[in-house]
Image 1 (spheres, helix red, strand yellow):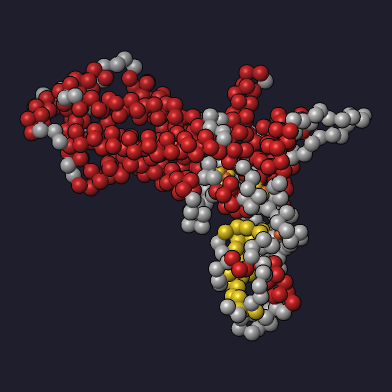
Image 2 (cartoon, helix red, strand yellow):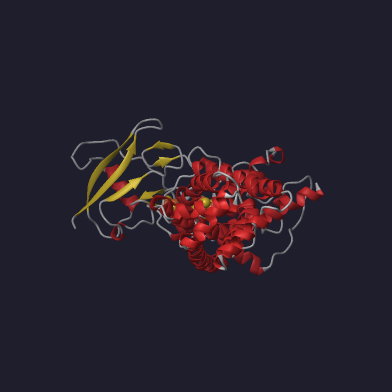
Length: 247
Length: 223
Ligand code: SF4
Ligand code: SF4
Ligand code: FES
């Protein structure tokens, strides 16, 4: 195998039509998909030998912890930086995540994911008018559960594979539900749990999820999303029933 | 701010999920057991149906525990079907297929129920004899028999897979292991339920000529 065939679904701008473009790159050992895109950036010539614009993509950490380089590789959503060419069947196809607005080529606008995090208040509230001192201590067992969810990098793979997450729909997606649980499990973060339950009851909330469980299968961080979804469904359901009587 | 947002959709989704189990699933089980009475004897079943019809306030009961929940569950269900984007070819996992089949079976059942209720319940007169005779006739007609078998497969699947989703939506199944194990339980339930339904259907299909003649005489005399 002396060349690598790459088919990329490109788009010149947010509203332009998309088209496929093929590239043939010289084979080297131990490449990943980001290195292929870097090779194209260095010498943007397609398989027909025409000079083209370099393929636009996003990347940052190059070690699968930032989530920026998510794209659909050979049909599945995953990170380009941890997609090893030697393990991929050829031709390698690259497509942008289509559950997010496309900016250009493989670059998408994932801000819906971050907006979802602000909806569920995925943070620990420590601001006040005086120094609140140290927070309560936490048990190690609880920390271990939280650790799993803390690895989320808001990459969007779960949302991309979720049949109920759509480009124009308002479902907040599985990642934000996992983060809501993460911060509810935090001793200080749990002060906002009521707000999080309310947010998960709002339109686009938790019950848009129909339990297809794709998210847990595609999450590159192996975050137990389906148990977070179920746990939050339990909590929100009881919260709603309780609200009928105490509010 | 979030406090002000409408809880209507949340309430509708919860009711959609609840109504699937209570009363619809429970009613379906009752429907199955009631039909299974024909296995004792057609005559006994005939009497049983007539007794059922004398329950006071039957129309109200039917309206509250069958029709209204069915309309809510069905219409909200169609809305859910239309807002999703299925992708089992790209993500060919068992649960993803079950998710799609839940939607397909729901739509099939929706169509089937219109046919079933219009032809059997509101067919012609309301007599038990007519009902048994029309079921027998439908099961002996190839296309409607096939429609019934497909509907029975869909109903059995929709109920068992729906039970699994219900258990998650109401916080009964939380852990991933529990979800998996209950998933297997639901597959077994599906098989049992389907076999039972088909068995009941066979009993309606195979009524003897003598029984059919008796029913026919009863029908003519307006019982
Ligand atoms: S389990 Fe829910 S959130 Fe996860 S992919 Fe399925 S529908 Fe989406
Ligand atoms: S939950 Fe997993 S797939 Fe979803 S955004 Fe976080 S890391 Fe990515
Ligand atoms: S570049 Fe950060 S995950 Fe790939």
